[in-house]
Image (tube, rainbow over all chains, first blue to last red; front, side):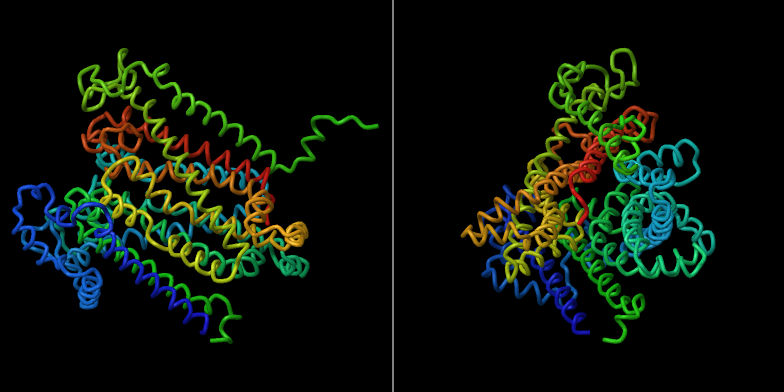
Amino acid sequence: MKNFSRRALEFALTFFLAISINFFLPRLVPGDPIKLIAGDAAPQLGKERIAALRAQYGLDKPLSEQFMIYLKQLAHGDLGMSYRYSGGKTVVEVLSENFRWTLLLVGVSMLFALLIGSALGIWSATRRGDPIDFGLLSGVYILRAIPPFWLAMLLIPIFAIQFHYLPAGDSYSIPRLEGWENVKDVARHALMPILVLTLAYLPTAFVIMRAAMFGIMESNYIRTARAKGVPNRWVVLKHGLRNALLPVLTSFMVDFGQLLGGVTVIEAVFNYRGIGNMMFEAVKSRDYPLLQGGFLLFTTTILLLNIITELMYPLLDPRLRRTA
Amino acid sequence: MSVHTLADLNQRIPPSRRLARFSGWIGAFVLILMLAFAFFPTVIAPYDSTKTVALPLQKPGRENILGTNDLGQDLFSELIAGTRASLLTGVIVSLIAVFIGAIVGLASGYLGGWVDSLLMRLTDLILVLPFLPLVILISVYLGPSQRNIIIVLSVFFWAGPARLIRARVLSTRLDTYIEAARALGANPLEIMAGHLWSSVRPLAFVQVVLVASASILAESSLSFLGLGDPSGKSWGTMLYFARASGAFLSDAWKWWVVPTGLMITLTVLSLGLIGYSLEQRMVSPT
């Protein structure tokens, strides 16, 4: 538990740093933040109007005071207003509308990638040096080199435009269908993004599992198990895999930050209603509050998942239970 | 006296090693081809890729073997011209990133103590942050340009190499020759830059290749999102314009999207294979 509280402190520190990045980034880049807010209209604004805007955004106060105000707003769940929607939507509103779609894509594809990737990794590890190992490894190397967004750009013309099997974009049909039809409709829309993301996540799971199993399959207790006459499948799954799970999960979480972000480009290609695509649209309209909110949400998701993983360790490794 | 036949020479090299060598040569071959495109684009490309040479959105024909883009520029020439931007970005980013990574890794691994904790916390932080969203955020503030993409990618890509180099330093810092050097009065800087560096150099070299491969892939994603130099020619930018002009709503994706992505894949793959092969050959697993 002592170890856990130390990790929790680290997560809190990381979160604080992400917040600080959000605060200082617009204030550090060369140029007046007002120009960023006003965009192309900046030169036409008079001196008084600029001063008014400065006061409105609190930019006339000293930096430390600005930071305190920012933290206070954040604590109240206020991430500011999005620029894009003329009706006026808060960033929190926009994020909560879009987040479930990203969660759907990432959750399902991460699950598939972990299951398929790990299974292939185990297979490869038990056939070290075999044509099967070679084939799987080369496949993964090639898969790793393919830009996922390009894969998406190839699937759309084939499956959506030529054959009309699947919709080319968006997360559901407009007008929305009802009941069971709606579920099928959402699944059809999610199919291609999930396929692309699964293929994008798969190499990481494969490589980590393969490396972990290599080490374990050469250890003494595996030899003992074999000597006892335990069937091969049982040796691999019980003695091998059980021990590989912890290091695999740990290594996978290290790469999670990189993997999760990848959803941004895929959502953009499919015009999917997730946080990533929302950030892509926000780039075009220079919607800074929305971009910052999106980044913060991604960071929070990663940190939460890291904490959950940390809490799962005792489940996976009995040795960690006693200290708890 | 025994005569070595080819068969028993082959037997002595473990199959994985032989495979690594083979894949390394394939990678080197593709990379040399790409380097030729990058160094002599005008020799290979039939047209100036920045000039309008035909009607826009032409199908592949005798004049333009891959057709033309929405501005009437020759797509094949654009593809060749893009090689330079993509490779250059990859090489510069990886050199900067591994340079920073080596300094951090050496200092952290050898000096230990608070330097180590501080630098490793920083490294962990960079690894845990959501890469693409943060890079998008920073790029938007800095403005779209190739130079900014290089800066942003370098800021992120040093963390991986730093960790690996630190691990290697930790395993060699207690070796007798390091101890001997210290006993002879060498200062920490000399030990780090001289002795330790020479032991991590192969690892760093492999990292340069692998980081280059990763940053070419990342650059294409960023340019594809419209964060690259819009007037510059890179493969990611080409795909950005292909999407913007709806290339995959027509048949144009076959000669616009397919070859461009294939170039990215081949380049990234060739560097990956070279890196893998070098790793097998030079860096014995710790």
